[in-house]
Image (tube, rainbow, N blue to C red; front, side):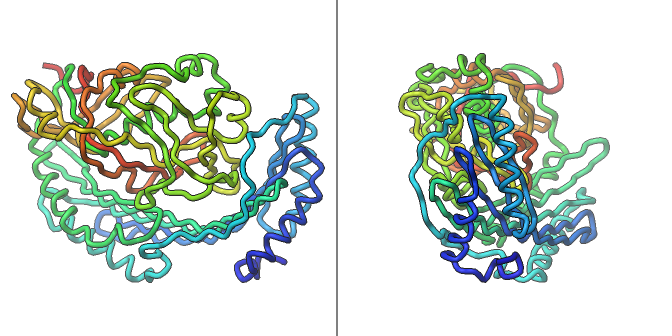
Length: 475
C-alpha cells in the first residue's frame, strides 16, 4: 500500500495494515496517526482578490511510550512508516532510561469505528468559482458604504481524513471539516479608524457563510456610527457581556486554567485550581464539550482515540472537573476523573496535548432586561476582539459597547478593553442569561503550545459582572 491509492483503500484493509505495523513496536504503548488534508484559503484585501491558495497535505506520526519516556517521529510517505515506528520506539527507550518510571495512561475503551458526521453542506460540494463569487460579493457590498475605503474578506477550509490506531487495538477513521469566514470593514474618518467584522465558522458544513448580506449591512452601518462614537472612559463598571464576549472570557481566562497537562507541571496553579474550590455563585455552570458541530470546536473523537463527551468544569459555582489527556488523568489520579476527549493536535507534525473544543457557560434564568434594569452606570460589551492572559490575569477587547445609564442602553462607545483577575471576576458574576449564542467564528483559533490556530468555539449566554476594570481614556 502507498499514498497514491490511500484514499481508495477500504477501512478493513487500512486497519489491518496499520495494526500489523504496530506489532513491531517493542514498547509499553504505541500509536499511529495519519492525516490526509485538503486546505483552501481565499482572501480579498482592499479592492482586490489577493490570494487563492490550496494545499494537499499527507503525513503521519508515531508516538511511543516506554518506562515513562516518550518518543515521537513524523513521516510524509507510508514507505517510511516502519522506519519511523522503530525511531519513535528507540526514542522512547532512550527517554525511559532517564525517566525510569512506570508508564501510566488512563484506561479507555477500545474503539473500532469509521466516523463520518452528518454534513449540512460539505465545502468540497461547492466549486471554487462559487466560493470566490460569494466572497467577492461581500467585498463589494462593504466597499459600497461611505467612510469604508478598504475591507478584508477571508475564507479558509480544511477537509481531513484522520486515521488513528494504537497498540491496544483501537482503530478509528474520522472525516473532519473546519470552515471559517470573516468580513471586516476598515472604516476611517479623520484620525479615527475602526474595524468591526462579521465572523462565522462551523465543523459541519459551509452553509454558515451563505446569506450574510443583512449581517454585513448592519456591520457597515455600525462602522459609520463607531467613527463618530467617543472612546471608552476608563473606570470600574458593572458590565454585561454578550455571548461572544462571554465566550472569549471563559475560553481564555478560565479554560486554559482547566487544562490538566499544564496543571500537572505547575503545583502552584494546581493548588489554586483545587477541585471543590468555590469559584462563583450557585448560578454559574461552566462545561466543555465536543458537541455543537455548528461552531468550530465540534469533534467526535480526539487525537488519542477517545470519544468526545461533555466535561463539567464548574457546577453551581464549585470547581468539579478538568480537561485531560490520558497521561494527565493518570498522573493526577484524582477521584472521579473521566476522560472526555480533550487531547488534540493541530496536525500530524505535533503530538496531542490537552486542548479545548467548545467551552461554554450554562444557560441561566435572567433576561437581558433583568440584567439592565438596576444598573445605574454600566457597559454592555459586544463581540470578541481578542486579548491575552498571564496566569490568572486577563486583558480582553470588545468590538464595541454601549453605555448603560439608569437601566437603559445609551450611547455607543469604542476602544473597549476589560481587564482583571479571573477568580475575582468569576466571583463577581451575579446574573446569567436565559439565552445562548455561539462564539469562535471566523479565522484563527487557539494557540497553545505553538500549535496554532486550532479551531475552538462554544455556546454561551449573556452574563453580568460587577466591578470590572475597563481601560480607556481618563476623565
